[in-house]
Image 1 (cartoon, rainbow, N blue to C red):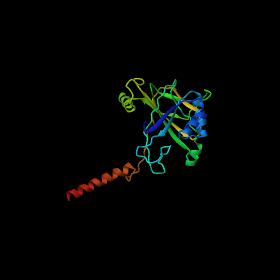
Image 2: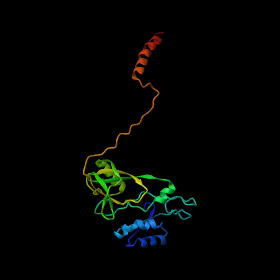
Image 3: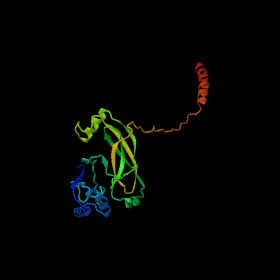
Image 4: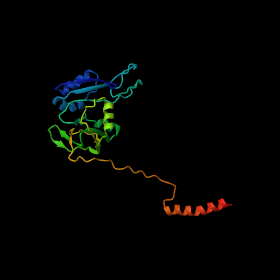
Length: 234
């Protein structure tokens, strides 16, 4: 599956999940156990992934898809996970990554979400106690897609023509995603405003060796034409 080995797990105990990951050679940590707790208690299924080993590989490959010490490289394509839900959501929680960010000296990262639906949508962050929080993400582009664009997306995703509404809106979200634990997952609902959103124009200033004053250029042309005529007569 897209260069991965996938196993779908279901349990009611985050500790049991971490114990299974440990025994079967997956990455595990107390942070993963804390992250998994609200999901396993809520009845979610967990998909455990490994980067699939190449048939030509001579040694074990790194769990994170990086190059192993022996020089064996691995690669994986984009992965699509499909599941049914009462409300569209993006699982924004993740294991606490502060230690990794400090090691990399990273402070911020950009999360970009492309949301396809029958209209423009907005996101809200909902915590474990069903309390809504303001989401740091924002819509930066929204508009109706052309029929040919819808057809192309369905073809790329290998989905039937009957998938979703007949007319699609695309809402693009951007989130300056800090390296800290999110209060909850992001749920999406129709936006109060269905107006299209466009990005501001990108203005690029280019320097030029030509004179900036238009009068200087005009005078140069006026002076240059009589000189050119005299030289031509000679």
